[in-house]
Image 1 (tube, rainbow, N blue to C red):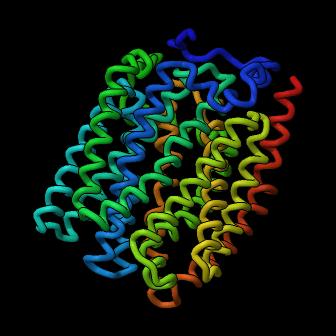
Image 2 (cartoon, one colour):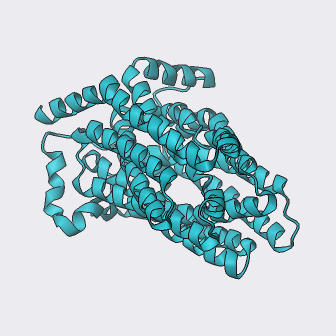
Length: 434
């Protein structure tokens, strides 16, 4: 299969139907036939696997050190604060420097941080402020990874396969939610939290090598029309957003359900312990249910999704998340809770894949990093909401918070449809007809 080293050409009217020749079995994986995207995807998969093992260990570590919903939310809030603060400047960097090289540096720093926490845990020197520092650093590293990594996808596959590629990329972040928590839960129970962090270290090391050896620097190169100041870079990105008001509305349609739905999931360790009366193994299994749903949603979009269906996919995603979060809050049984998390993961995955495809289709390559940095600054607030949810849950209970959040998300689905998604549907159908 030939590599795509140039920006993809514009899609023609029949391009979306081109994937039919791959058949039902191979059609969901058509983007993996491009070797550079395949290695990029594998690198992302390993990074996500390592970070999910670390996330599982971190959540359980905070519970063991503090047993406080507020502090558990605060740890995630620090992550969100640094992600939000770093998204815009890191987006500027992603348009000024080689994006592949930025990802290599990012992985190396994450590797060293995981090794440091693992060492502190094994030597019984770990303290809550250590976890806070690494969580804050993790937000900054994600602020690099999002604009640099997401913007590269459009250069790794032809434009007609963008929805497939973004869906597979979403799946690469969801697959580890199945194995990562389970592996993390077993490691915590058998050999301790420190071992979980060293699993992260190994996964990040392999991911770094795959990216360095398998994806050439040319895919990360950004063609700029002319050199300009940082302030001019930001003004250019801001002017683009101001001139595309629907982009703001679509970001809100993705942002609110993601923030509310994900914020309560961040309190899952405490929910498992206090509401379900279970331990680390159940926490790992329920976290895996969310990941399984994410993979299911991503693969359904990769197989059946069309770029003209973005509006429908986003509406279905928001509604599914809202209903699932409500059931999650009401459920007294582990199996039903797992089913709610499965559905929520599928909804979030479809929502995010559709939104990311919309961005890549409409953003010029030279400003992708900055615009994504601006939009994902708002997305970054999902861990911050865990601080509020944790504090409120300490007063009214974990279940009540989840039910309230679910109701708000369901209402958001209706507002999003009437406010912007109907126009996106018409736009997509008109483009397909043309």
